Each structure stands twice: as structure tokens, then as C-alpha cells.
Length: 246
Image (cartoon, rainbow, N blue to C red):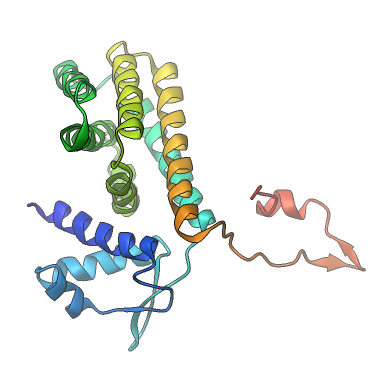
């Protein structure tokens, strides 16, 4: 298992425990204990804690370690919003650089997976998922974009691993992947970007659905609009995004 797979396993395990309620907001996460629990050195455990902090899932306080915070649907949506923007940007840069042979191999893998059921299908679709999104981002050639994606890829992969559990959902994702790859093979930039954006939006809805099943609907607390002379400042909601629907 390579270094990235190890980090994904630890991150996914922690997120799954948070989502199940086994690890509650306010719980401490200790680097040494994580390393022992997952039978790894302290280095990947430390890197996962930094990744969890960047994603707003834990809070690190000097001399007090890391504690789990109560993340909300807003956090999930914001991470997927950033992901969609970055991946669509990557696709626009990558569309002419993607290797035909690599895309044909990926399409064959997806079609094989769609013909299966149960754990075998889930495993192949998970592999196809990781390969497709990595292929698009890496082919962009934009090193900063690739680095930014690294900051959120563990969160995405964690929900990916949670999501591949039932045949109906997994087959639907496979069909979406197949359509994206077919469009990429045709070098149809507009259609590929539309399909990719819709696919990521669907992933966001599914992640929020998983969250709601565990915790109900929770939104981040917002500050009251500032007032001038007893009146709400015009345009405040539009300027700050506080008008987001629940």
C-alpha cells in the first residue's frame, strides 16, 4: 500500500467514525494513538491530522492537540464547490492532452464493472473513479491546481469509500463515468465539462444525504446582518452568501 493509500485509509476511517457518531464533536485525536491504531508511523498520522484541519473537521490548539469539531452540510457543500471549480478548470486544460489509449482502457474497466454486481463491482467502480478524476487533474499540467486538489482529495475519497456500498448507486455512478469518458474520447470540451460538473454535484447531494441520515439537517450558525440606523444593510445577504437555501 503506497503512502497516499495509507493516508486515505486513515482519513476515511476517522471520517466514518465521526459520521457514525462513534467519535463525537469535542473528542480528542492523538497522533501517537492514531499511529498505533492504524499500525503506521507517526508521519502519515500527522499528515492526516493536518488534512482534517484544512477540511474543517478538526481543530488543532497548541499544547492541547486536535479535537473534532461539529462540521455541517455547509462544509460538505463548500468542499464540493471548490472541487467542481478545480476539476472543471483542469478538464478545460487537459481535454487535448489526455491519452486516447488510457481513456479507452478506463472505458473498458467501467463497462466491465457495470456488468458485475456486489463487492466486485464496487471495487472496480471505485478504482475507475479514482483513475478518472486523477487522470483529468494530472493531465492539466497545472502544478498549483494539482497541489490544491491534493488538499481536498482525501475528503472526496473518504465519501467515495462510504458511497460504494449499494449496487444501484454504484451502477449509476458507473454510467456517469462512462458518459464522461466517452465525451472525453470525442474531445467534446463543453459536454465533458457539463457532465463532470453534474457528476460532482450529484456526489455532493449524495454526501449531504449520508450526513443527514447520521445527524439530521444541520447548517452553520450565521451572524446577524449589520444594521445602520436600525435598517439591515442592503445587499448584505447577496454579498456574503448568507441567503443559501437550507
